[in-house]
Length: 429
Image (tube, rainbow, N blue to C red; front, side):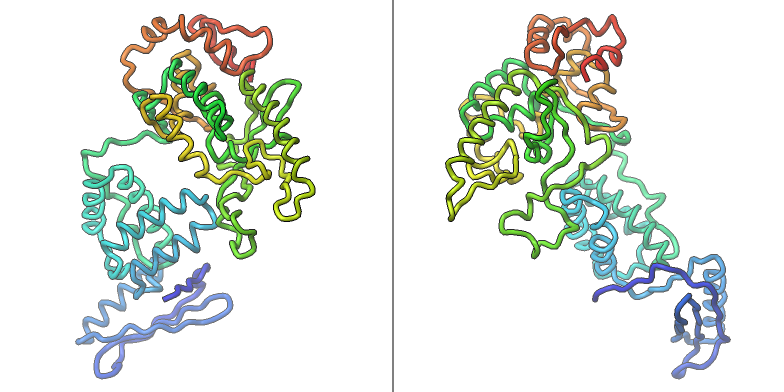
């Protein structure tokens, strides 16, 4: 069933008296909209008294606009509609996939055949308990989905009340602070490991990707979108303004082959669009890569079968094509193995960068601006006495900050415990 829901509400209504309908009792309702009138029938009541009681209830619902217009919609039908018609135009591909997996693997799998009007708090609590036993993170997502989707269902007169409002996750699930980034420092690299990673990756196709991640804290979707035109070569700065990925708002049939997941998209939030300082080691690598880029361009300019695609991407193939989101994966695993490093996800290189800044006693606000977050609360666990650890690692940390972390000419690392962190950060951002 393909749902078609009205995006407006009735402006007038009329409810008729109880009467005989097909041997039993019932009544009719007339709903007036701007452009049409809809008549609904409530029937099948065994006695006139039962029909009268239901009629009185409907009058109350019509009066306070809690009347359920669509009483036969199944949960599976509603959530397919909500996901693809309501949420898909608003969210990015990764969020869409997370929502879809949670909806199909848990919500629809558990209650798909039930009608929306029969959903109650017991169902919601049972769902939360079941998902929590498997994945706490997914349980949090399911709770968000249920609250938001049922608010929408109520606004569309699919249900009369949001039954998920007062239902919480099991007590074993700790409350997660709003927009809090929790970093497990055991899944990040220290300074010496970062140096080893850079050394081993130097002559691989993803050397620049690794440096953008671990030396500037950038996301892979942002890295793949960087163009030479985004670089301020005078001040050694980078303008992160777009990302590459799958755009749900574009019809894939209108795209060229192998470009579906390489669409230029706006950043996720306003704060993600930012200027970043480029460390010298990375800036030099960008210049070297530009020489290679121009060489490939000249060499393939007359190639009729595989011409060079001059899209100006820094991280690209020898033919100029942009990198896909998963291009780095196999190379990265091999580099980690050769470097004899413990495996962490590529995204954890961004967390590594964050951890180094935290050790350097940068302010949370400063780190949030670098990462492209807004009002982010950042915690790095394991460190029970951060100040002591900072003191212990200063001998190693200072040269790293001066040599690798973004800095201006004549700017030296200073003891952030003695100055306002924001003032220090503002000097080179």
